[in-house]
Image (cartoon, rainbow, N blue to C red; front, side):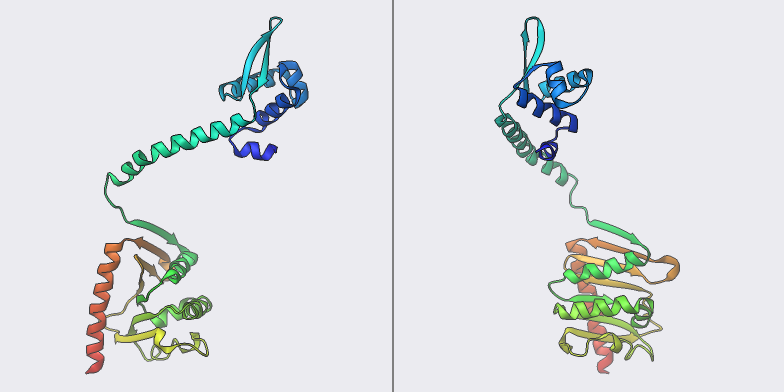
Length: 251
């Protein structure tokens, strides 16, 4: 019961004094303090606070200041008042958040964990993930994590399209990271000229998010930008690049 009163915003001492006041049905400060197990001066100050909270009332008895507890239902009444105030504030608060226009949500992460965070976030994708990547670099950088990430992505049925620089190693570099059985339609890779398109960073586009990571040991960082317009633009640019790469392969 004491713990629940703390959740309602009372301090530990306020809760003890309030319960003591209920148990003795109010009275002089000395009586309440003895029941609560705290000193008289501290109890008096706490009673004054509870009085301001409207959980107690005050009366005089033979010239002595006494305190009486309000019915326990007062707690519910006060909470309902706070809920009512909060609801009345919502329209005003919401108007403030939109007064400066939309702002993209940007999250920045550092270190290896930050890089992994960006990849993990992409697993929320309900549609396909588009990625500019360097398969040789990414598989060398964190082989264990990338294998787990790839298995999870394929298990979730998330399709991925990658554009990656063409190197001797990159042709089959991803093979060891794939599960023994999976739907081959869930992953497409087009290899582009490594001299023209070295791709030193990884860029992932999914849902309304653009994720960017650096895989260089001297500048490990991850960036997530949540913006519907940016994601749509980046998706369009990727599709344009994909068409160009497809035409190149067709030749």
